Length: 168
Ligand code: FES
Ligand code: FES
Image 1 (cartoon, helix red, strand yellow):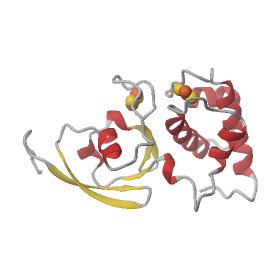
Image 2 (cartoon, protein in one colour):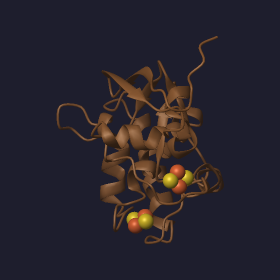
Image 3 (tube, helix red, strand yellow):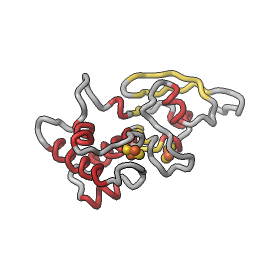
Image 4 (cartoon, helix red, strand yellow):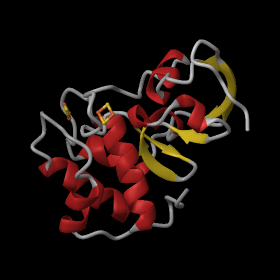
């Protein structure tokens, strides 16, 4: 077992949106800060008690709050942020659905909300309104009142079920 003292840094590797990064981090450094320092400023910080979900990313296929993961714990992980969803400038159907249904205002919660929606629709491709609300209950929004976010996710589930939008 490798022991890293508190004043030492560990060398870790993170794959983010397909790009591999090698970074040196203190053991106490949070993943959210490392991602933002690497330039992934689409990952936001909205609280310091793990409840807002603005920092949500997909890590090894599951949605996680990156403010609640130490960067050293994420060594070797495959991470997807909202920046990694669009392909060649074409929006992902979930992004399009948020746009078309006015599922955002200030946009601060939006990257985390979309990543949670991405994970939710992978787990449950045709969720009911109740399942959507439950599915995003770890993601707070102060602007929208949630109604249009729920509509956007329902719309995204329909778009994803159509042939022209192959599920990723
Ligand atoms: S920043 Fe609020 S849950 Fe991560
Ligand atoms: S759009 Fe402003 S916090 Fe959700």
